[in-house]
Image: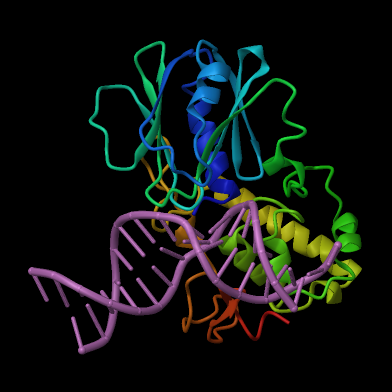
Length: 274
DNA sequence: CGGGCGGCCTGGAGGC
DNA sequence: TGCCTCCAGGCCGCCC
């Protein structure tokens, strides 16, 4: 369940290995991902080009190549990117393999196949459908809490649902939405429009702190997340509310509650969060 | 337009 | 031991 900190961790790991390497060949072992993998498009746009750098937008990894083509990856729920330096047999869910010019490989592994592998032609990013409607980057220093307040002030849906909506703010999934709202002292089921203008800077600050701390710890490892070195993160040791139903609140000792919001588990402290 | 929800997908856990 | 059901959840598409 990679969210922004996990993707950022993977991006940093890949930056140590990929830049300067040329993609020599691409093997699509199973094209049935979230959208069918277009093998011809990958070959045309990516093969023969060197990686220049790697960016992130929302939970997408953007591997930049020469000639301004881009490899775009999404890890969905269970995706992993493995950087492989010595010959290793394929595993069942190794779906796409990028062979590099120094005999190393990048493998896209994804048991649940919610992930995505695609290529973007030069100049095509602005119109790329998955990127076009994305909301604010939470760690963007120019992001103003006031702008979020203005967008949210007439909305009736619960604040937690809004935080998980990538059209509003990106990179915040179930874990970090729960955690951020705990630190901000806001009930997850509070209507987004009921959050006062003066509360938004507090909330944004909590979101940024939670994400930044998680990045420092290498992300959260629950079921599936492993970074490109095959190592999990450590942020799960510091989760204040996520997954802690019936356990005592770390601030006040009250019992953490679990509710379901639009099919997703929500955890909160009924005393600290109002 | 806002907002809820079903479906995609597999592995692991729990019940019997 | 094995079969069944449920759950995890990012994101799209459909619906009201």
